[in-house]
Image 1 (cartoon, each protein chain N blue to C red):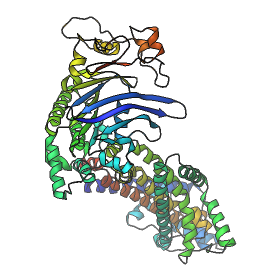
Image 2: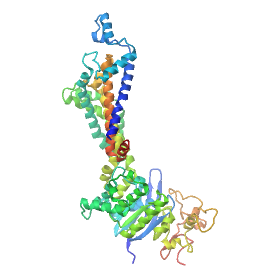
Image 3: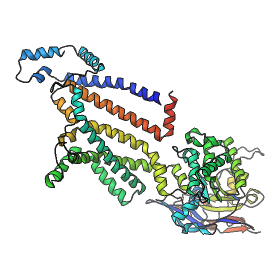
Image 4: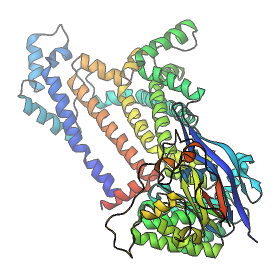
Length: 326
Length: 311
C-alpha cells in the first residue's frame, strides 16, 4: 500500500513579462510517497527549479504564474490555501534547500538564530526558549556541526559547513517533504559525497520524503528511489531507479542521449556522444514533441502532435515509438 | 577595536594639517589687509602697517603658516579680525543653531525618506512607488535656496503661519529644518529603495521565505538590517554636509549659525576665523564618518571581525 504524500497534477508554470512569455513548466504530473526520494534530472533550463519553487509557492511574484494544475499535499490543495495557511506549511511540512550555500544564509544573523527562526515560526508544540535552543543544538549535531558554533556567523563557516547549516534550517521542524535544489552543485567533490551521505542518513532517520533536483546522474543513482527526467518543462520519462538505469529496457531518446553523454569507465571510448543541438527556446516551444528537433528517431508525426505518455507498470515514457506495455 | 578607534583619531592630525594648509594657502593668495580690517577705513596708514607688522603679516608665507600651526598646537587659534574675540568663542556662540538645524533636518529626512523608500521597494512598480519616485526626483533636483524662498513666500508671507527670519523661538526653525531636510529625504528615499530592492532579491531572503517567515518579518528582520549599511553611510554624510552646508539656508532664513559666520568671515577676509571654522567643520565631519564606520561593526559581524584583526 503506497502512502501517498504529494501529488502534482498537470502543473504548468509560465514567466510572463511585457516582452515575452516563458513556458517553464508544461503539464507535469508526479506523485510522491512518504519517505521516498524522487530525483528530477535534466539540463540547465529544463524547469527543475521552477517546478520546485512552484511547489512552495515561492515563484517570483512579479512574473511567475501558475496557469493550471494542482498540488495536493496530504489532502490539501496547496493552490487553494490562503497565504497565511501556506506560511504555516513552508518550512514546517515542506522545506527547501537552495543551490548556493554561500548566499543562502543571512550574513548578519548568527547561524543558531537562523535555525531557531523556523522553530519559532512554527512553534506548534509551545516550546520554551530553552527547549528551542536545545533543539537548535540537536539539529546542529545532526548535520555534524559542533553545537557550540551556533553563535558564529555564516562568514566563519566553510562552504560545506554552510550547506550543512542550510540543511539544518530545512530539517529543524522535521518536515514531511524536503525539496533539495541542486544541494551539492556549489560544493567540491569530497564535500559533495559527505553532504549527500549525510542527507541520505537524515532522510532515513526522520522518514522524510525528498525531491532531489540535480543534473548529476551519479547523485540520482546514489540516493533516489524514483527518477523523473525533465526536458523543456515536461517530464519525458519517469520510473523507479531500476527502470531508468536498466539499459536493457527501452528509454526515451533523450534519456538515451543523456546517458550517452556520461563517460563509461569500463570501455575505452575516444569521444563522448553528446546530444546534438540545444534545448528549444522556452518562449517558442515546438508544437509537437519538445525533443523532436534533436531526436534521432523523429518522424513527421512527432513534429505535429504531442506524444502521449506510454505506461509500463509505472515506467512512463512520453514518446510515440518507445515504451508502453509490450 | 579600541586600537582601531585610536588609530583613526591619530589620523585626524594629517587631516587637520592638510585642511589648514590648503585654506591658509587660498586665503593668502587673495589680497587682504588685516590691519585695515581691524582699524577701519578711517585709520591712519602708519597705524595699519604697524599692526600688520605686529601680526606678522609681512613675514614670508611658510613662516606665517608655521607660526599658525605652532599656535594651533597650543590651542591658540588667534582672534577674529572683525570682532577681536577668540575665534572659537565666535564658533561656539553660533554652533548650537547650526547643530540644531542639521540634527533636526537629518532626523526629518530619515523619518520620511527611509519608510517611504522601503514602501517603494516592497510595492515596486505600484502607484505609491511611481508617485514617490517622481516626487523624490523633483525634490532631489530642486536647489535648497529655491525651496527656502518658496517656503517663505507661501508660509510666511501669504499664510503668515511661520516666522521667516531669525532663530529666537522654535517656530523659527520649522521652515529651515523642513527646507533643509527635503533634498536629503528625497535622496535617502531613492537610496533606500534601490538598496532594499537589491537585498530583497538575495538568496537568503528566499531562504527566509521558505522558512515560512511572514512578509513583514522578511522585510524588517532580514532585508532592512542588511540594507542598512549604505543608508547609514549616506545619513552620516548628509549630517556632515548639513553642518557645513547649511550655509545657503542660514543665509536665506538669516539664522546666525556657523555657515553664516563662515560666509561673512570669507567676505571680510577674516583669516583666523575662516581657518578655525573650516578646521572645526572638517574635524567634525571626520568624526561623524568615524562614528558611522563604528556603527557598521555593530550591524555587520563581518566588518567587526575585520576591525579585530588589526590588533
